[in-house]
Amino acid sequence: MILIRHGQSEFNAAFNRTGIDPGIIDAPLTEQGRAQVRRAAEELRVRIDGGSVIRRLVVSPYTRTLQTAAILAEALDLPMEIDPLVREHALYQCDIGTPASHLALAWPALSFGHLTETWWSSLDETRIQLLERCRSFHHQAGAWTDWREVVVISHWGFIRGLTGYEARNAELVAFDVTRQPAIAL
Image (cartoon, rainbow, N blue to C red; front, side, top):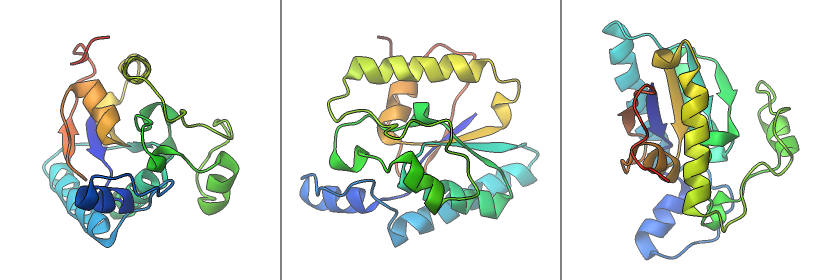
């Protein structure tokens, strides 16, 4: 499995400059973020040309991950599936999501019917809650027969919780679901 952190978002750009939450709800990608994702798509293309198989994209329902996945899906001709388990550790304003009904209108080719209207966590999500979600995803993904052929588009906090690694924007991170999670509860 390959985990990818979304490209740079408007939140990331502002927060990196100031260290202060800029209050951007469900932040979209910046142009730099889109360029980062295009480079990631090229890296995946090289892997595919080298014999790797990628069959589908599993995507967090935030705008920044949906935009990241849309670029990858178009470049690599892959289907996208929404999974709220891979959402961000809810700590900042950008971690307030867009209601499922609004996502369905903005992304009509995707299915959001399995989401609750307010699918994201409150902004006081604890580390334990995040790690429990990571463990649930790890268990779920371990049952997939095609896990080696899946790319998961997610977030810094989720990837860190699952692997112990702090991924940069649009970075590809290999993940073996047969191994124990890096961070224990």
